[in-house]
Amino acid sequence: MTEILSAPLVVEFPFTRSLGPVQSAFLTGLRERTVLGVKASDGTVLVPPVEYDPATAAELRELVEVGTTGTVTTWAWNPAPRPNQPLATPFAWVLVRLDGADTALLHALDAPGPDAVSTGMRVRVRWAAERTGAITDIACFEPYEDGAAAPETDTGTTAGATPHTGAFDDPVTGIVAEARLDYTYSPGRAQTAYLAALSERRTVGERCPSCTKVYVPPRGACPTCGVATTDRVEVGPRGTVTTFCIVNIKAKNLDIEVPYVYAHIALDGAGLALHGRIGGIPYDQVRMGLRVEPVWTDGGRYPDHYRPTGEPDAEYDAYKELL
Image 1 (cartoon, rainbow, N blue to C red):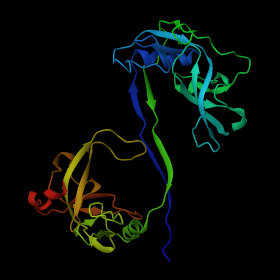
Image 2 (cartoon, one colour; image 1 turned 90 degrees about the vertical axis):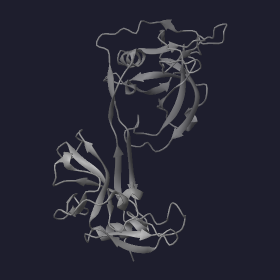
Image 3 (cartoon, rainbow, N blue to C red; image 1 turned 120 degrees about the vertical axis):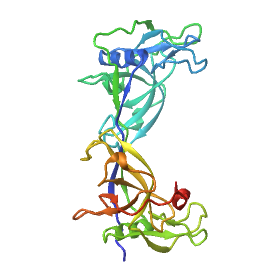
């Protein structure tokens, strides 16, 4: 019986973003235990603040300070927190309308159980011990039983917002946004066979019985015809560069010097191109139509890179349908 494969897979893309004056003031304010909102064109107070009015698209710059206490407008219980979430123990995701604000802020509420959470309950900010100018400077919210609901003005908006210049010493001007997906991946029948072949330094795809296109890596079904693909076909090992890009930014935890070339490579006999790094040639000499072959390292489970074969370049008509 074929072994069922599984492996942890992490997809992450941390990127640096600069901040405009409104977002800079908001995050710097959190570092200083101050929550800022912005007034919209109709006078409502938006928290978190935005730089353009959601209704009129007008630029917004009038900052106000709101309270650190508020009211839960809706919530959902999280019984099994994932890594890097605000709390390690079960908690509630809540939308909190802070006193002085007209919109709600999403964050975590530290509560002993779902029975302790309700719409309309009063809560307050619990500040992080160390603050750096990020939304995580609010460690979470906690119940605040002694607080009364903030009064409303004649226009229906909440009282309690006071003007603020947004000026702080050493303002935060940029942040690193961490985007990460961490899960366990288990390939299906088609990709299990593909991986098993790679361990033998072979590349195997599957042919669609209807359109006859050979998919590498195989997907188990033809995305065009919608029929199962069961006819396995060995392709390559040589192939043709169809398109490519020159990488000039060094990736985290990747021991490859820049610049280098990453390309789409149509292996001989395949109906579409796969990805691969091009080596053994200066990056500025890589070209469309270049004929390449895989280079394996000792113990490697897939080709380390592809290098030129020395053959004449492929004619454009030979690979134009694979671009």
